[in-house]
Length: 598
Ligand code: OXD
Ligand code: MN
Image (cartoon, rainbow, N blue to C red):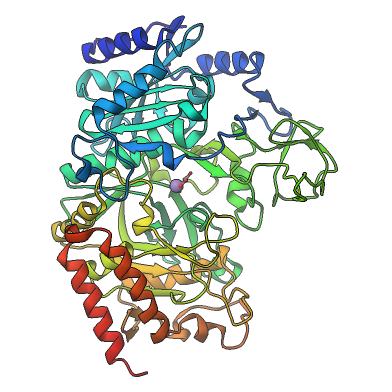
């Protein structure tokens, strides 16, 4: 493999120092070439880290299985390590940098013995864009390298950029023994560094993603006056050919990826709508000289959840993952292709499950539960360039202008299908009080609301009270701030049946949102914000139950008064740090609800 190109002393000295700590047998610099990718794939197949899938059906596709206890992000082992505990806030686990380095060093010591240390220079955002940030990840996992090649721009072009930029996030990862008792995901915002050890699961080890692009980036963004958010970015091409962009934040399992690449339902497609996908998970946003907010997706791939992905939920993703994709923890079929619960087609009559065991449908485990073929958090990693709806703006250094910010959660009651905030400050309150109900898939009482402000609770790299202040301040920097909305696709009727069909039909709501942004429709003023008149949501080709749209757009005063009690409790966690503006918004909403006698 080729030698590296860098003259960046800060980088070479750091690589030497980390190599001394981890004791690898050799060091390989990732150059981003197709030849090197092929070598790594072949080596991974030989070492059984990857299984080559049926190349006729799934060209350039591979399967990887993680350790059984290493299948999701481990939030309780994830820490923000700042000198002062207050800087991490009540929303984060905290460790002092000294204690964290000491603990982690003991695990990293010679952890890469007899292994290769790969040096991955990567850029989050298009290389050279003023939005972008460079990181360098050191890892002893080929799986990590092959994933990073899809999820980020990496290799020699980034090293060349580093000759000019010098600064980078120092990312160190080792699988070590993949021992959950020796697993730590540590962030050192004051040192611009991330150390992750003992895991091989994407969210813990693809350090450009949640660790850099959200936790570290949110910390940097506050200082540099921009925003790093857990948001999809999508372009909506309107019948007149104009494309408007929105950014949207939903907690996990609320359909962010599906929304980002939806195909319009017949009625709207005939009108001339089309969707362009910019990103499905992360948005970096800056105020430009035109006074509006512009966004880039720092990633270049999707790391999506496989179960439930099918031609109804996400036809564009079904196309995207047919080639050049790494599947993790899905079922292997006898023909060497893959399957997961909720995939298209028939359930296979046999296969090898995500744990590597022979599998047949409807087999029960010792506790009487059906054994799954794929882990519920099984994933695919695939480049955005595979996606039929990928926006041509993805590589543009300036990103896209954002017309609307949309927050959402999973609520059976309370939140209507859509509402618009009165202004930026009220919109920040709407985002800060966002919540989702726990489902049977999560630990906790079903129906209980978990607050997840701006869907950033696990990803904000500093005190969330300061994050709210930052949002409020950003509004003041914009001459033309995006309008802020809240949506809820999950409202149910008295029998517990969903009132709204969701999926591609959600575009009907986005159409109203854009009409509001362009002052094309009036709205009904309610205590919680502006709501649509039912006739302003285009229902062409959609048959809903009678009165469903009225029920979807109802604001129930009693439910909202109850909701405010939960919000008050949540706000109290931030004590005196909570910005007065949010307290005031709380009081104003309470007043409006009390006054409202409808
Ligand atoms: C993700 C997540 O993987 O939010 O995107 O957990
Ligand atoms: Mn996410």
